[in-house]
Length: 287
Image (cartoon, rainbow, N blue to C red; front, side):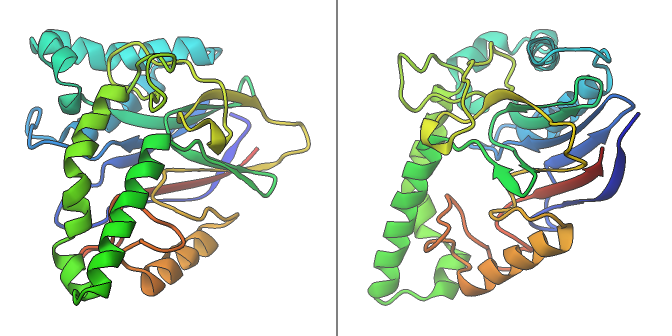
């Protein structure tokens, strides 16, 4: 192993529920995994699908061959979830109901290949630049929710009321469930398609440009003069070169805009009693 961990954290958005983000470090790889927020009440072995997805993907990262390629890693991570479906007789059902799939995103650093891989919408910071694949459908639904909540605030609702019962999120909830039908479909068939690990063949997108709008299935080489990397889930709306700076920016954002409806709109805000609007994981390494 030619990298070392400088700092890391995994924090749930609320003490009331398990964190669905995780970090894995092995001799050959380090990864940040983001289990997707459930869109239904369905659980698997007592776990939310995002939590189970994070655990299955973590196990798969630990088992990756040292010289695996992005394509090989994608296949192995996908197979882990598909095997769960098959062993529990769930494949036909989740094929028809994608909102019930065991789903996660991941960003992985391959030490032996000196590459960063994305499958989904986790993020990374390299040489002072944040690389964060963005899903077009998330941008659309975040804007709708933000506009709805801003309208409600202008018509007598308070921030505290909407933190307790987010009516804007209720408006988009049906679309949040339906968007699962866009995951891993061909972008030629749907402009809102995006890749994730969900037990089905991963949609191969090739751009890390947020204008692509399709999330990420990408690989970049890390230049020889780069000696630090940050991997993180999308629970950090602003990713900085240190954990303290990233946490400070998150804290400032949540204090100024707890509903997340202004400069950084999201599909969800800071609920009453929660620590943040989403689970978060941060890993900084020296290479």
